[in-house]
Length: 339
Picture (cartoon, rainbow, N blue to C red):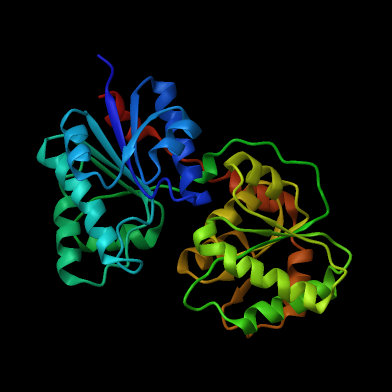
């Protein structure tokens, strides 16, 4: 009898990074030959995009029944178990895991970024619940250390996006800008970044990437207006609402990339695109330091002339080689799935 696997995560919200992780995971599960059901905020779209069964994440009665009748729960990837975005979302993902455990199902925590968890009670319950999971994996050393303090044994893996298989597109000579809204986003950063782009790349087409329209699109449109106000003749295009493969194709054909989101930088690195990281989060800073990418802080205090020159002198082969050294280790996960 075919095993049924339920996948729980931030799916159906149109976020490029989470959807790309889901595509990697589904591809692996299909190769093994497992039945897949994804919990999604938009189950119809998820079913159509990945050719899998999907139910509404927040239909608690249906989710409970599904977990009871399934064999394995996979929670992740992404940063699900944290309360910075919302305590409610942390409690929801813990509830899904707890429900699966209550029905004695195997639970895999899939390459998650854990924390920060500021609520002490939530942190306690997170540790207690994860101790009972079959296999726990995290995508960064900080998460690994946090779980260790909680008494949870975890396996440190790279981000699943590193295992995406795609060919580099032909160099389009375009400049990519990937922005997201965030509490520390400010006009000083946007104007300083726009002035430098107009100065260095006035003759280039600029592609502005929205990775999740509900969060990114407004700031992308704002940045586009700033660029055109500084140079009305500069050619700009907002890339939004595209499929995972279309976004990958667009990024892999860029000449340069300036990005905030972690998965935008990973995709650029895999194609050897010379990039600048905008440091809105510790995971971005860590990736930039490991890959040798120049960093811009949210307060834009750096000398942008020097930062852009540093980007131009990066070695494309070294960037792609860095990405190639990150191999996702499926062995522990496969052992649970096949066991």
